[in-house]
Image (cartoon, rainbow, N blue to C red; front, side):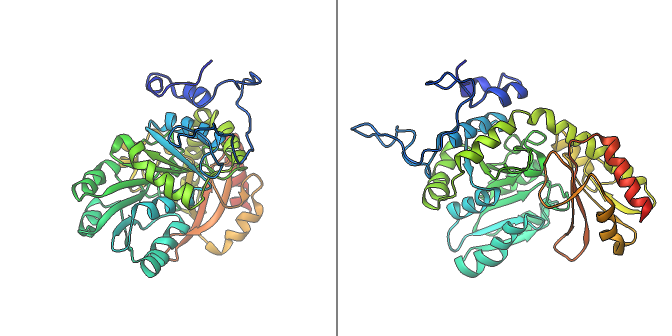
Length: 380
């Protein structure tokens, strides 16, 4: 077997790409799986052409990181990919690479907390980059916020932690007509249920720590898009700022990615089952899940996504009982993060002081998850 060429990706099925892209037998040992390469430097030829030497120093690029990039590019359908130390380093590193003092950035007001902190505190106060956080579920609100200095529009869809859905295809021409780029944090989609590049986005981000790894045991991030756009981002964010992914994390995530096409449908199915149960329970005040018709952007999510992912929100009628619910649950672990094989639950807020449960529905049997929630709710 030889490593898949990029032109082959489009004609191969998703599961085939997840298993074969980026992989080939080890040239030295002929092991079926590529090895974990922990070296931090690599032997160079006597006369070095720096443009063609693949590996020089592990901070710049390491073999496991590059193989992971090839796999993710094949799955996302992008020309290139940059693997980074975390999802936050992917996003904020890209912002720093693309923006300068005096520029303006528009972003979703519902966004990952560390990204919000960068946009609301560090950029305007320390670096002279103006930022506007708007309700990107309303494309016209995005249009009204444009200025001549707008260089980038950043969407997080589905939004963390509220499951808000922004219309990528509607906002892409708004960005491009203003000469701005459109980036999308697509982490909550699990990569397979949403295709931002096909909808007009220029850059896609993923926290690889979540669904793509899928087992809650590795950190990583990804930046995907055209090579010409990603090359200067790679130099600044990875080589100059040092936000490289470790070989071991890259190896772990690549191993987990092979089962992503099997895992994501199960996450989606389980989440819908749990959401439908919660929506009918008398002690539950409300439920938000893009797969429910009651979700405010259900119609958009149905057009934009190939599945509704495994994340949902809900709250109980007596918020004082939240700690008791968490105490009584047996299968849902009270922990942060998402996209793991096990189900997770935490109390979050929407950045306006409104608290609720954020649930990452895992891969357990759906009947067991429903039964666990039911016994916890009944006994409260």
